[in-house]
Image (cartoon, rainbow, N blue to C red; front, side, top):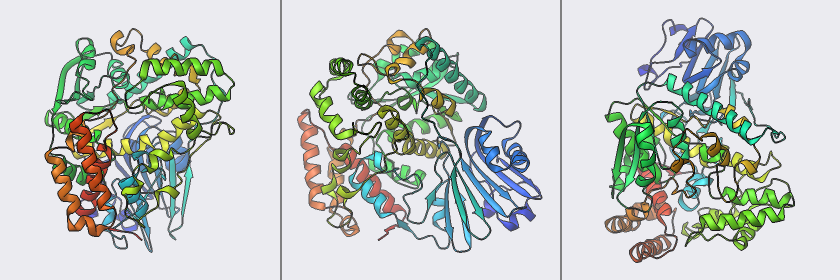
Length: 584
């Protein structure tokens, strides 16, 4: 592998000490001097002038690695070999946009952007991590990344976002965080002032990335986030959308309001009932691991089409929901902040507006529902402490084989650096739940087709602003993304800017796992390999298949099991494709 990598001129002597190289899409970003070598994967928007690897190497040798990393605003993974001190340094950007993995075995330390590159090294066992397998098999996708240092593989570690790692010649390592959000007082600026600052920062983040990209296009849904990113370029752009034959999650009608004023050419990628099993096999090979949610199948097909059309980069709206309290569940944590502050009347008014705008035949909304959920999701006696959602974590605990792993005893880490429940929930999503798996999926899928990916909402300067914005400027009168809506006035079409209901980024996987695909599921579950793996309770899985099919056929308003089956098919495909055992 290392022999096939690109090395800079004059690196032969340095490479003898520790071979570092580049193998991937784009021009190799490597710089070499007699006493050191640097690799820079990604983009620097501020802090470095000229080719980033050479500029970073000079900065690290002048002021030290940590100071050099702190000075860079960008999306990056960096490696720096300091031969003067016999040290290797690794760093990852503040939000973890670029991935970085490593293994440490006796006499050897290795790192790569993908775990599969490390799996074949001596001393690295071909074993899946048991806890990861259990969480992927029977729990919710928000649990998969709770430990930011873990990977799906027993012997492979992941460098967390906003961290650096020092490795010395004797094999000793030191991990440290170099950037952190602070629990500061909420801004006293007016809403108009904050909206203007927000728009300026977001547009700056968009335009910096547009300048860095080559042959770029934009993903576009019916929501505000992707629409805002596209509109802030100030020019019409090519846009790609996944649209569905099944109407459940199709957003064609909502997307149309953006087309005339902001889109040069719209590229709808129509998805009917795909060959899920074959596509999952392709995706798992691109990811080196199972893929968290079914929505990424749609993104995979969008990436493939954009690459076939000659584009080299895709922009998206990832991070917008977290920054702007756009997920439906954020209402509960906003309610908790109001209750903790003694604002009972406002809490009741907001709960009533929430129910009025967002009631659903399956997911009901009311003051009583809000009170009930608060009792299980937060500790109102401890400011800011959010609790694990046990119902979500344990929903499919009975589908695991007895003795494989007890999900009922699993306790995820719940960070609470802030006094606000809403801020802590956002922080948890950014660093332990929703963002890590989404960023990883986006990176792998774009890279599989030679694309770069850009998410302007995940700019740390925006985060530092939005973590000082009070919750009342994020949620108000049952409406989310209040400050973003104000900041985009005059930029987005009013139909898009003022739309209250959201379909949500989802896919009609309930249809994908019924009919003929339900028969394929039954065949998989009945197979000898599935039984002998010992992960699932076969009878319970068969019962869930029958129940799911009945729900889909009847059309009744009940939760189906599409995400459980998505996870099952992905897990089985990964374990089989990589020939993995499961660590004890």
